[in-house]
Amino acid sequence: MKNQWSENVNTGELLTSLELMSMLSISSTTLWRHVKNGELPKPVYIGKKRYWKRASIIGLLG
Image (cartoon, helix red, strand yellow):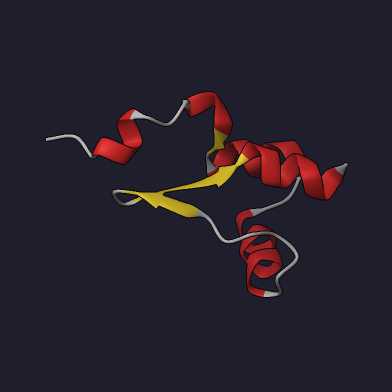
């Protein structure tokens, strides 16, 4: 059975860790250091997968 919330989310609104690392040109270690330091928002979880809200990241970069 699919998670009801995940069915309502447009996948274009979310970034995977690989997409985010590519967008920011950073490594996995640097990504998690920024999250730990509060410089990047914490990811949202859908099942066991982590995603970042695209709008939140663009807001930080803007």
